Image (tube, rainbow, N blue to C red; front, side, top):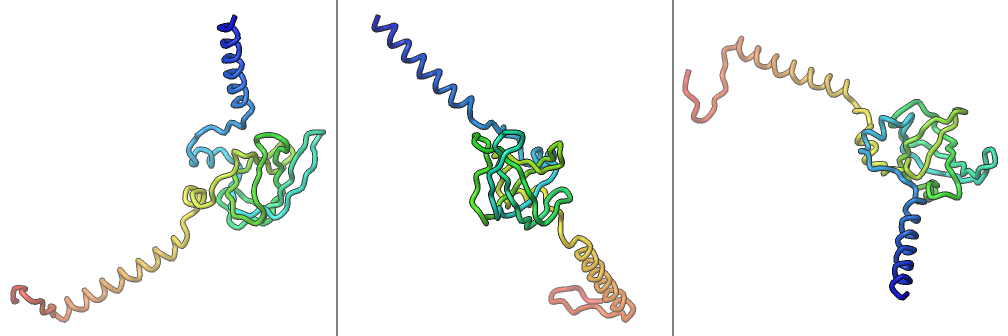
Length: 170
């Protein structure tokens, strides 16, 4: 009898432990590059307002996000993002703190996010950010190359060589 009770208690504990995991928000462990590719938009911004509401009877959180940097997609400077409310997948963040968000478009063109949509802003910008100043870097490189070539041809025409210590004579 005591053995059965012990087995029943052990089975109950194991069942409750597994049930807790089953209710948790499951995000997966895909690399940020893959998650960014699947997202419709990605931004680094700050949540400036949180409102509770509902959509068709389901509780929702309406997050107003001020976009500091667009990483992917054409988005406005201020976004209204919907998130579930009262679940383990709620977006729970502090106001006015930089955050990266991977967003998807809902059927009604609303931006949607869950806890799985929240990423650190630094790695998001590194993975998805566009290189800045590419044209300027190329232009500066071409100007430097032109100056070096002009100096080389000028010295060649003059027939002068630099006097380097230990270099063989003409």
